[in-house]
Length: 214
Image 1 (tube, rainbow, N blue to C red):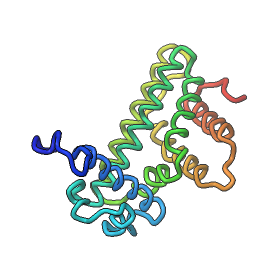
Image 2 (cartoon, rainbow, N blue to C red; image 1 turned 135 degrees about the horizontal axis):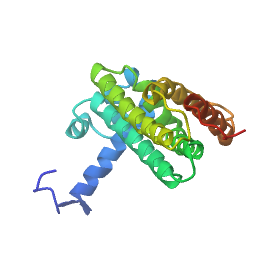
Image 3 (cartoon, rainbow, N blue to C red; image 1 turned 180 degrees about the horizontal axis):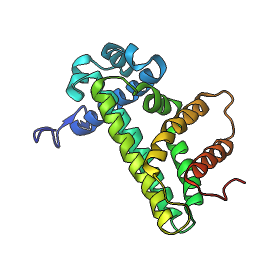
Image 4 (cartoon, helix red, strand yellow; image 1 turned 90 degrees about the vertical axis):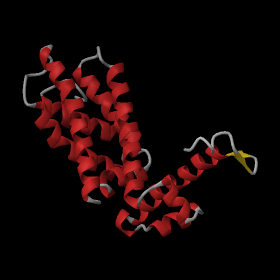
């Protein structure tokens, strides 16, 4: 934002507030259309129509449709990672099994509560473009490192056996995501606690922890 726009108003509203509102409308429309129609079938024109804004305004905010998808993906991933990190920190002294259960709940509640977010992050971002795919895989490694770190810390305290947790976590991430996506679009939805119980058992079994959901 240029220095000239700061403090200026248009029809009684600060210019910077109008720009934030406009960007938010594009983001929400992108989320809706990418989830409903698919990224490949959602043109800039369709996004602008849904947002009630012009293509000129779109390109003032985003360099491309891909840039909008990347921003959406980044926001969804960032929010879910923050939620999981907070859950892990809150259960740090409870043991690895309880930490996993808390992390699963936080992740599902962040990504799966809105089916649009689950569809965009888990389905539409996959293979959307070479750049998007590279970024998605980078973020997958961040997740893997974070979760493997929890397991490795638990192993040093004798809670679970030592092992190649980075590989185990990587193998499970995709499966976990698709379970969450299927849950988010199911009608009627299975009980959240049932999904958490299944995923928690799967993850704790994969890393050798015990004592959850038995």
